[in-house]
Image 1 (tube, one colour):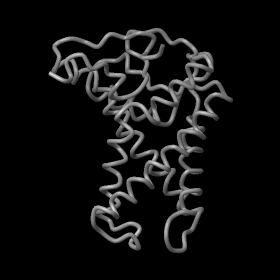
Image 2 (image 1 turned 30 degrees about the horizontal axis):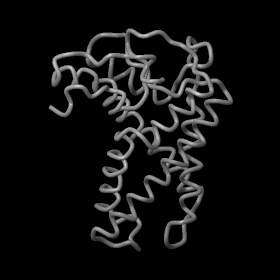
Image 3 (image 1 turned 90 degrees about the vertical axis):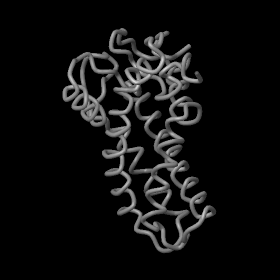
Length: 204
């Protein structure tokens, strides 16, 4: 089976296991996290394919029309925004010493784990790996990506409106992806009958 030896990190990107220690990242590890969250793991691509499909269904922007070519443009738009958002977020997290990885909940129960996943889209640990802080870099990255991407969209765009909409989208898509990440390890366990091994939370 293809998924039998597939580490969860390959699916959801670098994360902190529920049984693993909270260890501050080095600059080299932060670079690795950025590359994996943006280019290497399949999760970002799957989300962009889905969000581009939503854009296609909404005919947004309408100037691109329909068809496979228009869908490709929407996928490229979504992925370009991801690169912008993750770059700004990574730089901000590094400057502030914030944790860029998702930490799996150390709680039990479906509701508690969902709440943890949603909260982590708004709060993250600072360099102490104990104190939670507003995830300002993530939302700053979303806003900047919306403002900049409005420059390559067809038609006349309102950059501030696009930035605000991208920020709101971060709350929705980010929370949903965290929920998926929270249960991905359990899903893989059901498929493979074993829990993935964790080596430094998926980092070298």
